Length: 196
Length: 251
Image (cartoon, rainbow over the protein chains, first blue to last red):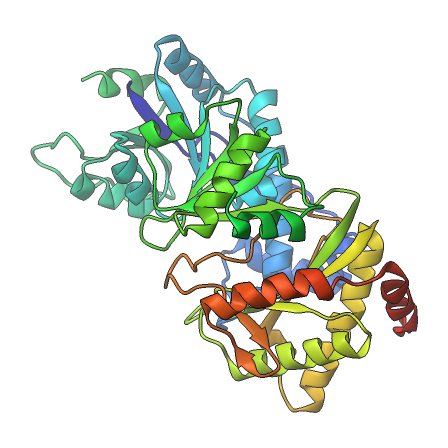
């Protein structure tokens, strides 16, 4: 069976735009002053990372709570929704493959997928999507992450990524190998690529 | 039935057995197809950062399949983690983890102090703990003779945890070095599972040895201690209630 893995954030949805533009409201569960809340929010929006070595901190808890709101309220790409429905009609196995911590985000992720009528077979989380695709024999990955765009070819995974200003330039391949990454403007462009 | 499976079923009798997280080095769609039979469903899967160790959150597990999973667990074919009941439980567990990103499986000095102090605190309250070495620290279990509402269990653990953090401070340690989590947690009881005793660490394959005041036991002695704890150290409800009532509340 033909299988494709598809990322969620900034691939099927507008996660970063949601993070940057959405109004977030502090509540008592944040356990932060308004000043500290706004400071953390500004840091999160500019991509600040903590310098320390600790896994679980006040900021990591804050970041998760804000991200969860983004997961719930991000807008689905209509062409992405149509693409998953086309895959389903054409008997593809669809794996949603995400960096999200699904221990906590599974419910809201499944609800978002259902609300947006996005077809899929399995939900997987991993920090190593190329490794996952290689291990599971998945030849096609739709994902926006620079490291996956860069490494896909080396490990035989065809990576397709949404063209956007913030993304790196595509790898230069004078003679394109089967697994070289390709940028797309709309998901429709991927259809012939995965049938080559 | 393997006597170790019987022990696990008895110790964790209150935890739902129709759902579990399976940790294994097996993966692939053919494996998944075999796994998802008899009505078993996959909520989500995970490729962990540790080699090719995968985790699968499974639901709708029939009793016979859970018995198979538990047998595989004691035979070290895989690890089984169970979830807590959403309302009330007859077990509770403090999860003490090394809170560092680098070398997170090391037992740091703060951990030794914390687990010793927490153990001493619980024994002082008449609640004998079962302390199991986990990958990044310790799981400190208590087993009750009957289920108690999750809110009460969590409040009890929160107060014991605060007492442990205070003891760390008194001895000149920073409690941020350790991540304390308490289960069942009414906020995440369907999200977080805990490995059952008898597991092997996914990274280093070390058996989940039991820690006593005299030190860590080997695998065989750990199973003997586990059986003895189950038989003789289950906490009476009246004892738990008295212990909880004796703890200072929020100021």
